[in-house]
Image (cartoon, rainbow, N blue to C red; front, side, top):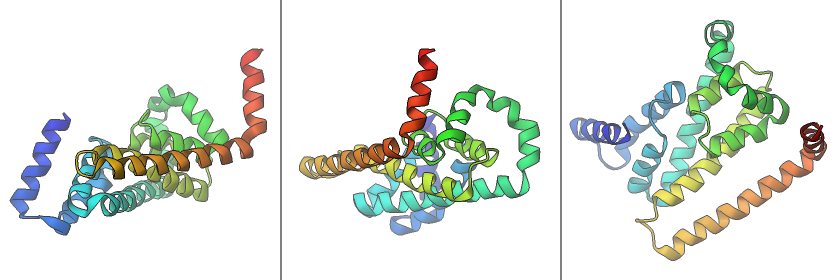
Length: 203
């Protein structure tokens, strides 16, 4: 599937004659569609952006595009299709009940985890957030931090053949520091919740 999509994107770029920065005319709309339908891994767009704009520029553009797509889809569903989606699709989200509970309990931090590790498709995360009591500000911050984490990690891994090994290691080192800071803040803010969850599992 991924190989087919890669070939289709290459064909589209060649057909439209887009090279260099002009590929954004294709990749930005694709980022919007990915946030809505989730029919291809966002890592494909990260690789495209990194190959054109270098590592930092490519990851920054990917991060902005991913944030824009996720936030637009979230507000679209919450504002216009909340009741319809909850009625038509609510039952299909039952398989993600555990993550929905974590989302309701930990808010931003569940979003950060789910966007960093592709346990759940990106579009499903947007839908789950739209039908949850999650405040808008929490969704935005969780999306911004989660997408930064995901793109930083996968952008670095996908660029391992482009940048020197020493530079690649630096990106991963700083990513590790970023993760440690996030984990530290999470534990500090939710220590009581974590202890409650631990006690409930032991009883």
